[in-house]
Image (cartoon, rainbow, N blue to C red):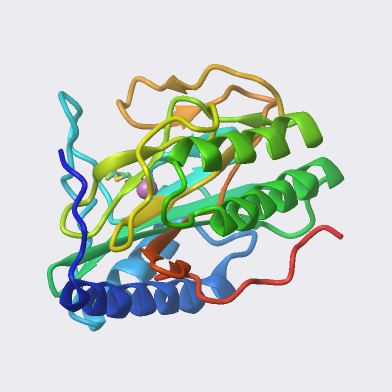
Length: 263
Ligand code: MF3
Ligand code: CO
C-alpha cells in the first residue's frame, strides 16, 4: 500500500461521496429503535446507496485469507466493536448499536461510523458514547499538516485512558481511504507522540476512535469477522473521513459537530 495524496479533482469527488454518505446516515437514523432488526437497517442503507448511484464495497470484500464480508454494512452491538453482521434479531432497549460502512460513489470511497443508544442506556454506556465522540473531536483538531500521526494517537489514548479510565482498542486502526477502501497510513488510537508518518495536505484519512469500557484483547469469532471485547464489556466507535488541508482538517463526512450525548 501507499499513501495517496489526492488531487483537487479527486478531493472534489470525495467531497461529494462524503456528502451523500452523511445523508444516508441521516436517512436511516430515525429508524433505529427497539424492535427494528439490523438487517432492515442494512437493507435501507443498501437501497439508499443504490438510489444515489453508489456502490457498497463491503459486499464480498475480503482481506487476507478472510471469508468474504456478506453485507453492505457492519452492525455491531454492545461488546462487538466492529464487523458485526446485520441480523434478523430485533434491537432491544438499552443496547449500543454501531453502524459502520464504506461507501463508493463515482470511483471514490469514504468511511463513516456512528454508535447509537437504543432507547435508554446505562450511565456508563452514556459516558462511553460521550468520551468516544469527544476523543474524535479532540483528535480531529490535531490532524494538522506537519504533525505526526503518533501525536494524534497519543492524545486520543491519553484522553480516553488517563483522563477517563476507558480503553482504546489496539487491534483495529484508522487508515487512508479514497481511491481504495484501505490505504496507508495506519491511524492508530494509541501510541507515542513524535512517531509515525507526517500529515500532509491532500491526505484523506478514516479517523476512528474505538473505545471499550474495560481493558480487553479483541477476539474474532469463528464467523471470521465479528470482533468482540467480550461479554459484559461495551464498545463505541465514532468515525469520519477527514481531508488534511494546508489550513487544517476538513471533514468529508459528518460535517456538523453534534450536540454531545449523555450530559
Ligand atoms: N468501515 C470498516 C473499515 O474499513 C469496515 C471494514 S470493511 C468490511 O474500516 F468489509 F470488512 F467490513
Ligand atoms: Co474504517
